[in-house]
Length: 211
Image (tube, rainbow, N blue to C red; front, side, top):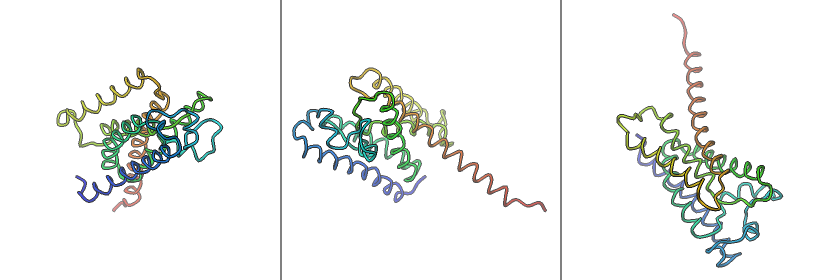
């Protein structure tokens, strides 16, 4: 079990990302006024950091923190806090940041490659990355068993199913970003866990000497 101090430190990382998102939203309010509350247009969002095919490279990153309406903002912040705290506590700070950034970037890049005219913004790809990482706990955490942790297992599966259904049926949802983020978030912890296992196995073999 992780210590209370370690858990607190990882929570601060989650709230740090929330703070960055809020900063970008305040900037959106400053530039676009009430439209930032009710729903800014794609052109307006480009002015505050959203991404399109012809955008500057820095918008690949800034677009992860930009949100077009108060509803969009609140939904993603709530999910970020819930899933982010779980992921950061379970996988640590470094993997938390890698999952957030890489899942979001992968979702945005695939979206732009498939639909050249779209304007992309929001942390949904990163949040679905956390959802994928949350699902990967069933594989990476050997202490979790179906018999002893049936509620957690059921909760993971239900959360994934509901999120996927929402992605497919809701309006104006970046399906490509969600799916790419979910995939990246699921795979990254598996790769990390496998790499650590191989490294430890290799180190133990080097230290082994015949008598």
